Image (cartoon, rainbow, N blue to C red; front, side):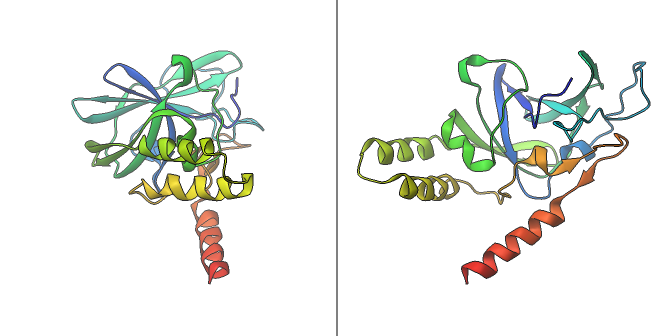
Length: 211
């Protein structure tokens, strides 16, 4: 069972958040051994499909400042999960509160700036898997809402400034493409292929064009 380009979930203090994005070159799947040890009806590490090329989802949990995660794959409707693993990654996460406290992975959005459309957004910094900073970035959606509610600006202006406002409140460096598109296990389902080089090239081209 696939959920499109579905997002991961993070639990902090018993509260559920959606993972909007992770900073550049951060791939939590490689920060621990997520081998699924239960008996599964296939010999692949992932279960990719044409609508879920990553082939897995991660459920994160922060306890006493330490980051943990569990990998889940689906074989049709049946989930198979790894044991929970301690992560030792370095980088930023952007998370936000799930709408209507909804549980599940079926959420779609187009990159880090999308946090501006969610409630209770935070930017988290992890060093060796330890939570070092949790910044409230709810000022971004508040600033953007004021711009929209003023009824003074055209749609094109609002779209341009939506991005500027969102990025202004972030410390980490992010790609425009969200994390669940930057990994691919389709079609083999044996290993994850990283697409970071592709987005590095896009970024260089964008900078050259701006000059």
